[in-house]
Length: 239
Image 1 (tube, rainbow, N blue to C red):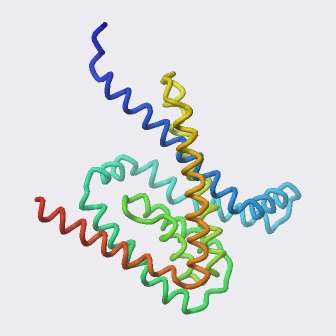
Image 2: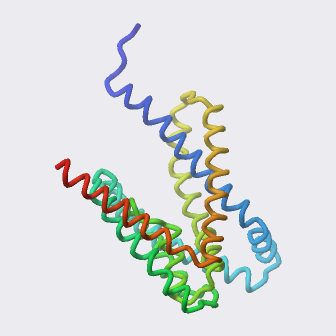
Image 3: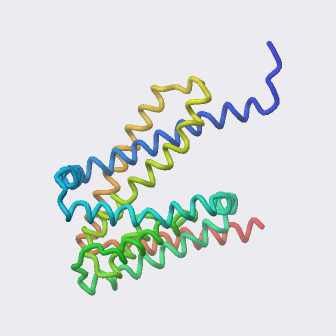
């Protein structure tokens, strides 16, 4: 047959990868919307009726997305380069383990407040920080909310809802790349993978909230610290 143009194999691999990435974004979005469907419905209804409380909450969600959007646009290449450094991932896991462990002290303080503009900004900064591979986005944002005095389940709800614009943005940025390719990529396999990702996402969110509710959330900390330490030791021995 005709010779494959230079870089053709790389393109074949990249396009299915983009398709998978878009599918996972869609599945993650679906899982968030399903778990928080009553809150989303209430928010949409309130906004459509012009209720100040609903518009205020929507404004806080928008405010919380700004830091990550600014970092993604201004420093996207820098953060993308971090994914090529295994040591960064190991170090970031240690950071994740540390702030998850200290969440116990934040919970012990009995946080009972609601998100404010300052909370939204700080949780947004935490979300931007979580662009670093190995930093838990939901963990970082929720712990930031807890330390600012936001009630645990309120912090979790705000954390997952503030992810919706970020997920949509990521999917929209990738969609043109996928649409322009015009390549068949096994829609059946993608559908199965997407459904599996959505179900896994729902279970993960529910487990996350339950562990916050019963104050066992900090137990994720030692796991991340252990994995990060072992990974860094492995890299040191291999090097």
